[in-house]
Image 1 (cartoon, rainbow over the protein chains, first blue to last red):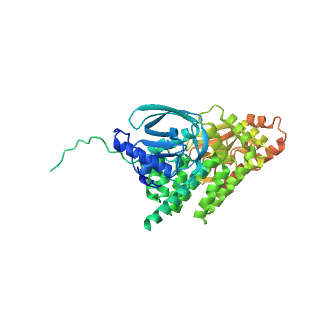
Image 2 (tube, rainbow over the protein chains, first blue to last red):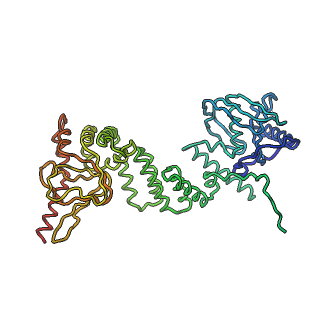
Image 3 (cartoon, rainbow over the protein chains, first blue to last red):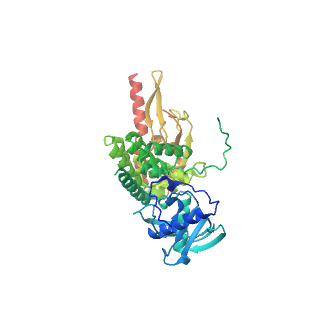
Length: 174
Length: 290
C-alpha cells in the first residue's frame, strides 16, 4: 500500500467528470487500498479518485478515520438515488486545504454502488456520513463544495481559492 | 500509411473549469467569453452581468465594467434593493471617478430609498390603475414605480403615501405608439397625463413651421391646466417613441378629492407643475415674434 499525493486546487483533474469503473481487478483493489491509506494519513473522512489524479468513479469514506473498520465504505460507481431533508454544516476538503464553509446537504440519502469486487449494494445513511458521501460523489462529477456556496460566502471562497492557487504557483516556481 | 480507426470507447473529456475557476486562475479572457455566451442565452442573468463587471475590471476595461455595474444596480433598484444598487454604483464610481452621471444615479437611488415608506401604497395604487391590462405584472408595476418615485410630483405628494395611492388608483394606465398624437392644440379634452416611460413632445405651428417647444419625460405631467383650470391644450402633444402614462380624467379627479383629508394641498401640488402654462407662454412668445 502507498500514500498517494493529493491533488490540490486548481489541478484540472478536480474538474473531471469521472468515467465509470468497468474492470474490477487487482489494479482497482490496489488503488482503493492506497486511497484508504492516503485518506487515513491525511487525515480525512473521505477521498475520491480524482483527488489522487484518477478519473474513475471510485470513492472511499470513513467517518471514524481508521478507528472503526466497520465504518469504512468503498464506493464504486456510486449513485445517490434518494435525498431527504436539508441540513447546513461545515465542510472542508483535502484538495482545498484551509478552506471551510457551511454547505447545504441532504439529511439522509440512499446510495447505490458496487463494492470493490463489483457486487451491487445499497446504503441508507444519514447525518455526517450522508454529507461525506455527497461530498465525494460531487468530486466524481467535477464539483467542489465551494461550488455550492452563494453570495458573500462564494466570494470569500473565491478569494481563498485564488490565494491557494497563488501559493501553489509560488511553490512550483521555487 | 493511414491507420483506420473506428474510435472505440471515447476518452473521458475533462470538464471545463467553472467561470469562478477561470477568474481564480486569472484567465479573464476565457471567463469573459463564457460569461458573454451565458448572457446570450439569458440576457437578464444579473449574476453573470455582475461577474462580467468584475472580469472587465480585472481586464482594466473600466467603461465596460461601469456599464455592467450600472445595469445590475438599476435592475436591483427596480426590484426595491436600493442598498445593493447604491453599493454597485459606488464600485462603478471608483472605476470612473470623474463620471458625474454616476453621482446623480446614486442620489436618485437614495431619494428612491427615502420613498420606501410610500412604495407599497403606490404599488397598490398603480395596480388599480393598471387594472387587468396585459403587461402590468408585479414586476412591471415595480418598474413603473421606479420611474416615478423620484419625480417632483410624487415627492411632493409623498407624505404618508395616502395621496399617492389615491392619485394612482384614480388614474388609468395608457400606452401610446410612437408618433401618436395624444391631443391637438385647442382641444378641451379634460385630462392630465403623468408620463411614466418615454418622451412626449409639445409642438406648435409658428410661421408655417412646426416647432418642438418642449419634451416631457418620466415624472412630468401635462394637461394640468386643462383639467384644473378648464383651459385648452396649448400645443399638439405627440409621443416621440413608445410612451406609457397615467391618465387622470375629471371623474378620476373627483374620486381623488372625495374623502381626501387635504384636497386643497392635493390640487395645489398638481397646479404647481405649471407645464401647460409654460408651454402656452412659449407658444405666445413665438407667435407674437413671428
